[in-house]
Length: 116
Image (cartoon, rainbow, N blue to C red; front, side, top):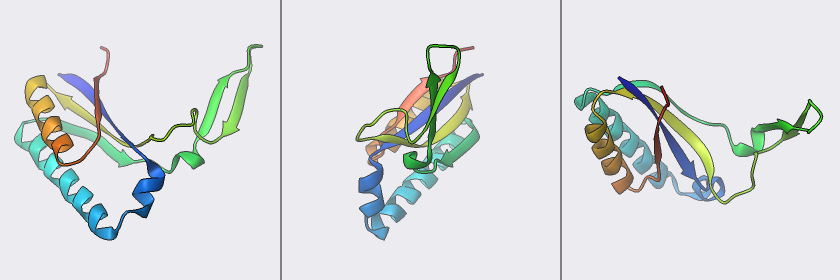
């Protein structure tokens, strides 16, 4: 079986300003995605939202063998990774179809297979 990481990029500021009805719609979409995964025989290993990117800690080499540690996201961008799914599957075409249905309901996703 292969493992896949599905990243959920979204503009954090816009999401925070959406009305409750849009958040509920999103939760229903995630619920349907969970059902689609189960129906396709895919194993959901882990899923979670992430804390806001402002709470991130970035670490990068300082060029002298040490690390520069800063508060906040690694890059400044309109979209941040707000959550993820880690999925195990032996049927990539069916998994991709489930992900396409999820995206069609208004979700922006990035699906990547983990290197083995």
